Image (cartoon, helix red, strand yellow):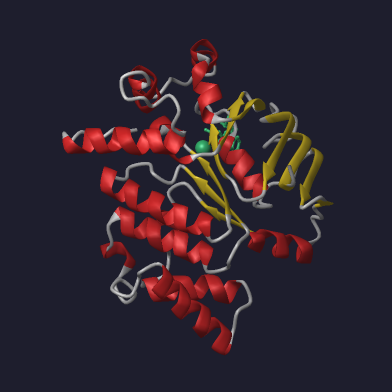
Amino acid sequence: MKALLEFENITFTYERNGKAVLQNFSMKIPVGKKCAILGRNGSGKSTILSMANGLLRPNEGKLFWKGEELSFKKKRLIEFRQKTGLVFQNAEEMLLSPTVYEDIAYGLLNAGYKGDLLEKRLMETIKRYALNDLQDRPIHHLSLGEKRRVALAGVMALEPELLLLDEPTSFLDPVQTENLLNELNKIHEQGTTVVMATHDLNLAYEWADLFYVIDYGQLVFEGEPDQFFSNESFVLEKGLIVPILFQVRQLLKDVLELQAVSKEEAVAKIKEMLGQRRITIGG
Ligand SMILES: Nc1ncnc2c1ncn2[C@@H]1O[C@H](COP(=O)(O)OP(=O)(O)O)[C@@H](O)[C@H]1O
Ligand SMILES: [Mg+2]
């Protein structure tokens, strides 16, 4: 499995002589997958995402991008940071420009785009993320879902190969969450590797190909969602729970002959059934 980004034996502390937030941490993100990073609060998920975007430098250990050791020299780091777009938790709070148009232009400008190229990329982004109706609106008039869409578009305007999202669905309603997932699926289908830290285990089960479970700054599980949730005592030990979507699938396996179908097909079928009864599975 070819790794896009690899963490190798990384130790990291925020403060000098402070407690290590990551301890001998190793993890490989393969090309082209939808990955979910799970773990209790404070386990180190946001720290990992910031490091994956070149914002934090390990105290010990190495990062590799496509097999090449990451250099922390300024120019190389700027290049690397463009290849790995990070949408922060509460990204909407970071939209500082007066309008959507200006916000996305500002990001492009910062990344060195100028003139026609900037204009072209800006227009493509506005079209691609269906922001036409929003582009001249003041950002503070947008809904949370719209603000998140703008933040995502701003990051995607730079065409990263790896998209990192920190708790992107927190405080979104079910429709906004569904819209975001559709958007992320489109981004993934167009060839971007996507990594999301989330507390929403139903969503993680539905969406992800691969789980990375973090506990106390260590990777304690890496593998398929079904494999992780099948071991309930391990899940509970790591401060998580088995989500209702996985439980329903297990319960209905025999009844609905879901035994043989893939996770995606089973989830689609369960959602369809619940949808007919207007039941949504919240996070
Ligand atoms: N800027 C910071 N300065 C000092 N400690 C921090 C900082 N950010 C996070 N931490 C600490 O690092 C640990 C991991 O935090 P974080 O990566 O935010 O975890 P998660 O995203 O899984 O909740 C926690 O103990 C947290 O208190
Ligand atoms: Mg966090």
